[in-house]
Image 1 (cartoon, rainbow, N blue to C red):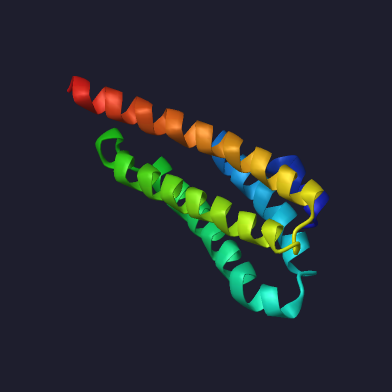
Image 2: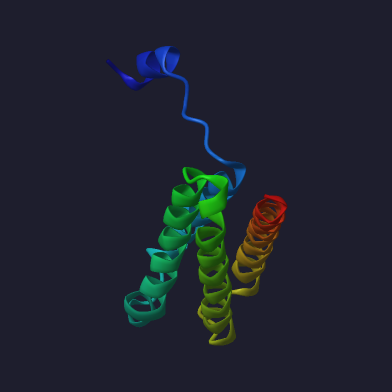
Length: 130
């Protein structure tokens, strides 16, 4: 079965909007990561790559948990996202990441952070009601 036939019978999976945004950021990052100078790709670039993948994994994991179990995982994702922002800032300040790319990543990561913060607040609020 080819891809066209497959998509006719099986619609693409639906994922949380925050996961869709994280995936989109990762795809942008991956294209940039391949072209980083070797010294940066093998150090801070690998860390950024790992944190992005960790964020995707943690949010995905949290999405399958009960409401009472979600909060710690969302908090971990927020922490990893904040670390990711700092690492990207370092790349920008060392002139490895240009202004345009830095702004692109920053805006997208801030948006993801707001979504995660709202989700975390909602989970905490709902768990305190019980």
